[in-house]
Image 1 (cartoon, rainbow, N blue to C red):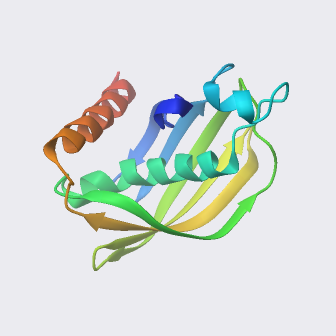
Image 2 (cartoon, rainbow, N blue to C red):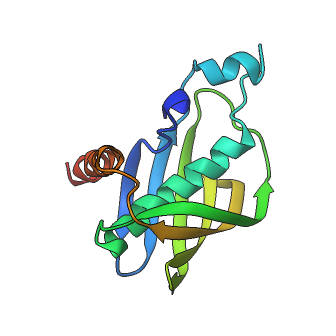
Length: 153
């Protein structure tokens, strides 16, 4: 997990396009500029970054469903629950499942677990839009390929 770059997913363990499910992993670094202010001497991953982690896992799941022709962008979060803190050095398991897909939107339920126990969960809506530019598209699809190729290895 590279918090300062918003690269939240380190590995994809399961990617089931047809079933609409992903299981991914994130390794929280021991040190990050984020922890300098959140909080000195007690490094906690901000809740908003946990939401972002779930959204990125959902994005990896949705990209192939869009045939890589569009980008899923986070549109809304509902029913979010942050149940406990996440500290430096922990490994997180992220799961996301498609609930509804159509009309340019995908509804997803997502959760993060640590050692099998829920850390947080939410329902989210992602909107599919055209790529803003080719540079961004190349960067996102390159990261997608890294994650998928690592899964195949």
